[in-house]
View 1 (tube, rainbow, N blue to C red):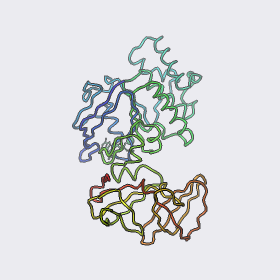
View 2: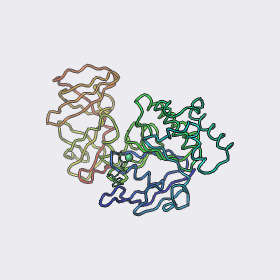
View 3: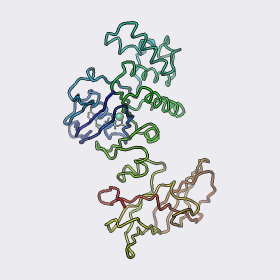
View 4: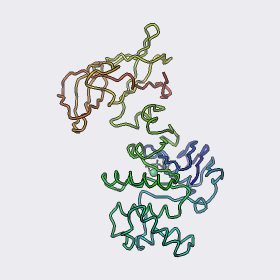
Length: 357
Ligand SMILES: Nc1ncnc2c1ncn2[C@@H]1O[C@H](COP(=O)(O)OP(=O)(O)OP(=O)(O)O)[C@@H](O)[C@H]1O
Ligand SMILES: [Mg+2]
């Protein structure tokens, strides 16, 4: 187990800045998720931490030891990849024991550790089978068992669940999380699936274009996104964004536009702001501190457990609303919605950073 510290890490492939100055400090035993769209540099960062990728600039530390130039085999890390590469010609037990065999562990120690890892992953009855005789989920468990037999200092996983069907993913998600908690091994987990990130990560590092956008708990990322990108990337359906004019009346400030006048909690010191409103923070009934808005229903998605209403605002612009349960709306119907004023977000239209009010 180890703390992982990443300092101003850069990795360029020719002109492509895959990592463009990443700073990250991961605590001992923490489960950190790297989240971001395709091509943002998640795999490159993971490979740089593992030593599989030689970095252009910057440093990697495990505890106080600098490992930037250590080969992977000397870092005491394990990796699990998306394509759970288990060796087809080896039985499950041999697959799991392979890293120990390479390190020339004695036979009885290998047996003991394979048994231990197989029990942890609930695959003890499968040790005599070949990978071809396993389901996808079972194969993935073998790959994870193989990754933990050496009790690595750091466990690195790159989209390990993306080849599994939806139900199995959810099951494996909780299993992996529980396993990590039991082992207490520092884990860095790559995904582009926001639900996976939110449910598994102690903290989430949101990346875009080789840069870290925000590093925080699921709650921080959701409730106080650092910028428009993070706000739009996490949450489903996506947050509504409106570029609005700022007006003041005495000491009170409002964002005005699209048929809305939203009171702000302070002076944004801007002529215009981007207002961010999550669909689940707009209700079909007034409650607490809400702001009414009239909109015309354009399209309704009935998921039964919730109803997603796409609406047109009177002055143009689209507002997406998420109402819990199976609620009836007619397309073309004009109806009133209520924006929760305690949950609106304000961003700077130029820098796209969150404005704290
Ligand atoms: N070996 C390479 N040679 C050249 N460019 C590369 C190489 N590996 C990655 N890149 C580029 O670096 C950037 C980051 O790639 P990376 O694989 O880290 O993204 P990712 O976030 O893991 O994406 P995905 O979610 O699709 O796996 C991309 O623009 C990619 O094209
Ligand atoms: Mg990748």
